[in-house]
Image: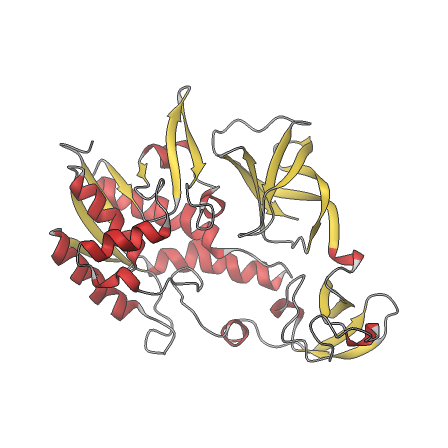
Length: 366
């Protein structure tokens, strides 16, 4: 399959990218590894695992029998991803840095670097697929629906997909770990990373406060404008948030409890007045909406979807596909209407559209 072709695999130190490299080597590709270091601000603290990740990468490469280059894209990451991340938070939105990291770093800066070194394409350990169909490249959901990462890849374009390989497209996570274990890769049981792309797992509010100074304001009940407490800054909160409000209420509540014991959820952010509005109960109507507007559109096949066709969409990762239609569409924005109201639709997050297993692209919820 890969005979005579060179592929550079982005190795993260985890089991997925390790098995991706192993499978490609077994398929006859000339495989080279690349480890990206994209974050330097607090490299010495407990939340940055890049040193251990590099050790794991070198161990995996030694067993597989491939060379590894180490590159530093920290400047590009800060300029193209992190600066945008901070701008969005300042504006009151909740951005998804992993989406931008994929389109701007992994499948742009990394891809360009690999091609300059003579590679034919790149590969990653993402759970997604790509196929050529009717003269165009399609981005597909992975076989393992619980791990599918097409949501994070929806901004990839034709040029990027044409040079990308996803060896794990047809595998389940349990199979990937078994392959790694059988090959003697010590990362077979390594815990998956769940932190911000390249920044790692850390207390998020404390991290954000380093870059966005606190701006204390009021927390008020949406229904009656009652003053409930104080927040450190609306930028630190997101729609649907329950934890960290410190205004009382418990999750659910016991039988016979009054509504006063139900948990509070963030329902609205008033950036101009620096007020956080909350409602009680996960099922409160203010947390649901049956339509949204999205901007910054990006369509995988360049051609936009049809209006008034039935598609499915996700407004956040790990959400079940929700039937919808594109009610209005132009070059800059679209209006999506859902068959059923959606919970905690959050400005700044990604709206990703699907037609069966095919990811069509999407935009940023406005």
